[in-house]
Amino acid sequence: VVLRDDTASDAVELYNAGGTFVAYTGSADAFKIDSNGHVTMPKQSVVQVRLAGTQSNVSDGDTVLFASERFDINSDFNTSNYTFTAPVTGKYLVCFVSRTQSLDADSSHVRYRFLTSNINYEVIKSPNVYTGDQTFSSWTFALICDFDANDTMTVTIDFSGGADQIDIDDQTFLSVNLVS
Image (cartoon, rainbow, N blue to C red; front, side, top):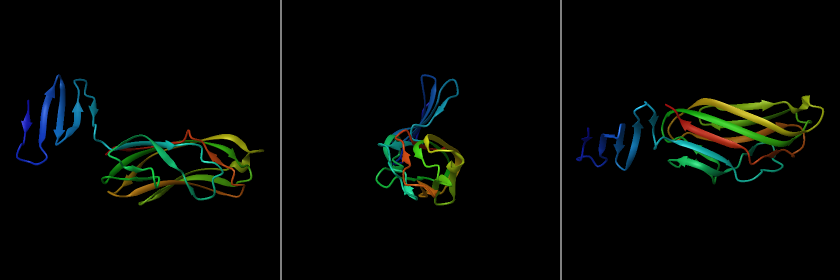
């Protein structure tokens, strides 16, 4: 079955390709449904970025330097200013995992802040409950966030008290995926 509108500048086609239903818009497949019901959307916005190397001795309020892309469908992440920009209004799954080094026990709190145009989110720890500096500390964050078209998000780290000795390991990742 093929339905096609050749009169439009952005042609739309629906066709069956060996048991897979495909919707094609203009220059690429927009989505596919295979015979088992799996839906893939090759043009759907999804980003995974990481640090290019360890970010050493961060200071209070520093931006996390996500400078290396694993993938970025639709070019929604800017590695020059470390900012995600939502291409459309919707709900986005934001996932973050980080490993820090030399977490100073003299800090009353350390937090990662996810600064968005609509609301700020954070994940926080109190290292002053430990008897000494933590060699490694793991952080995770996962939340569905609302973004309007062209809203932005950056990630910062801040802390109260202690020394500027925290290192953000290069095993720190941020993923953002448009889910609805």
